[in-house]
Length: 318
Image (tube, rainbow, N blue to C red; front, top):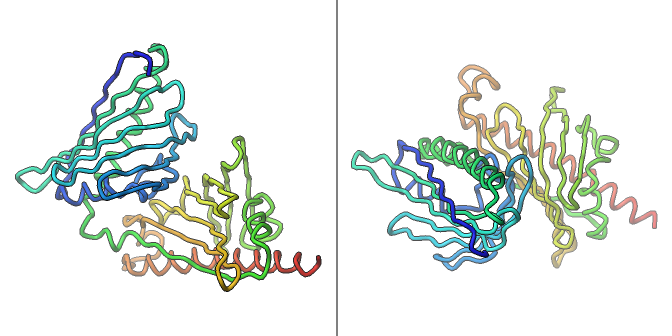
């Protein structure tokens, strides 16, 4: 920073949940893509129990941005301080604090502070950052409050699972199939339509229509971040089916002592108020969990088997 003026924003929300439950959600940043609408992916680079370094991807003002964030956890005061170590212009400095205060009646007050500076302290840039922070902070606090106030049912609302298929083919060929999602409508039966844009290399925006086992269709939109050297593609659905409040996933090509495996991972937050609307009167969260597990698992496993047939066929042909 070169002497720009520091600006501060403050946003607070009252939460009908214990402070410990609220602090737990703030602390677990790797799950923020499930919790926060604007967060797409978070990679934990380092963590010693107190000091944490994260690589974060999130939308800001309609654009996907990425930065490195350094965080310091203080469970005693239920505070988490953060600082962006690599900012993107016009921002030259961004830091802040999550503060969770316990109320006498068992509820909490959650406050999010931001301090920031922009290059040259340009009024237009300051206003843009303030607008983005206001929109994102309000959305984050609303999401946290909604989840925290359901803390007694949190384990029923959130589910994570994976499916694995072993493939006898080079990892590069398998990854290439997963990366070229624009070709999927011609190759994968349950993908009826897929539109892909990649304005930034390795960052894909996808709109896709898929078919379920009963012939029903779903339209989803996703952001995918591709890591070719690691054989990984992570994604977040920004438009989800009715039964899902949030959905993140990952395609992972893994080499081990037994050869090559491809893993499809999913994490979901169920939309509780849609369970009976989607599954019928009397349906509960347990049935919704089974339904989502079966539906997502069926499609991702079908994709994995298509990848295997394609990659192994090309390998034999050569």
